[in-house]
Amino acid sequence: MATMTAQILVGKAHPYDGGMNPEYYMYLSENGVARWTMIEENISHRHLGGGDQRLAQWIPTIEHMLEDALMMIGIYIEKDEILIGLAKQFFNGEVPRMAELFEEASQKRLEMMRVRTREIEFSNKITLSIFNGSTIAKQLPILENYRVDVEVCVPVYLREYNVWSSRQEATGRLDQPSIFEK
Image (cartoon, rainbow, N blue to C red; front, side, top):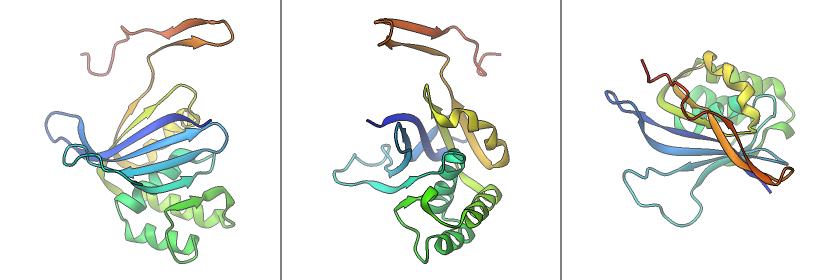
């Protein structure tokens, strides 16, 4: 069973009040094969529709899982022409909706795509929510290398049932100071 361990919202930041208007959603599922799924949907402007709303679904490399998500944003949302050209070379002519990055032969070209993604000046803000147990929690420092407005949300408090102890257990504190407190 796949578990969602992270979520990325991509959209325009509000110029005065913080927050954002998300237009794209990405979900990282783990446990078995990791998979980033990107969905295009602006809930502020239209109702959720039926059918397959996936814009893309990639199985990332484990070592560069967060960077692979940023690469997807650069290709499908920012539509960077240079990055798209590199992706077409990598994927033999077309940028697929479904891809397995660890299966591809040319890791050198994949690294070239990551380098280009670091050069993009993103026009969108991303909000990244990391859930307990996510592989990308240790990859967060890589965000310093990207030119993107970003808000990172990590757990400060967790209360959940522990199957081993047969009881609910809590970690962290809800009264933690935040960056918003001065």
